Length: 144
Image (cartoon, rainbow, N blue to C red; front, side, top):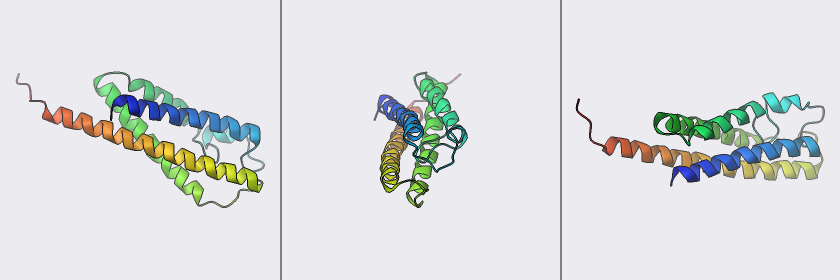
């Protein structure tokens, strides 16, 4: 696995969250009475908070850097993907939040899709980090 695979997965996760948030607002896929501001702070039923999504964009941009900057971006984006995936798992155990059955089915399908994307991002991030660790530990120490 290469860093590019991880970057693509992370970008797909970001796009999924942006589109999912917009879909939640336009199709009213949230608990009745929930404000749009809720998505900024808490996310929607199947997406992360907008403030996190903004941070993810910065983290993915960092992965195009070199050395520690790229590693920090990869580590933090992988951690966020783990947290996002855990949130998606918890959503699968919720009961209908007061929307129609059809909307609830869309929410559940989107949650599963988000979980797949999040878990893929986690797996690829872990693979990239392990490869970097192996590469760094196999290099001979430089003497001063």
